[in-house]
Image 1 (spheres, rainbow, N blue to C red):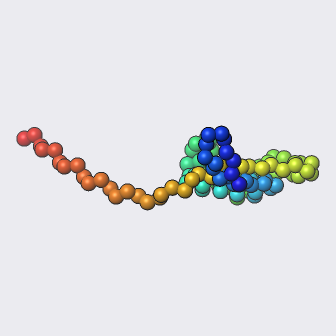
Image 2: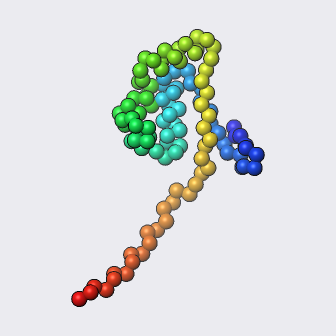
Image 3: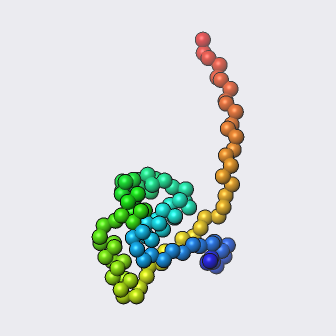
Length: 107
């Protein structure tokens, strides 16, 4: 699946349907990994601890989220998350630059 804004190249998207806290956690983990971020990276950016992010990604969250998802299921509704998948890029690392010549010492 992909979508296109006028004048832009279509970017592939990925969609998740959220029914449980485990679905929600897996979605967060998948999107985080697609952006090459660690749990520590996303935790720091979000003001959370890495341990809490780990709990969220494994579906071990507060009862509030579980209850909200249960209510939505009972009402026949679902949550859908759509993510624009970044284009593949060359992950090769350029060789290191040669060291700069030593500056002459002032003696």
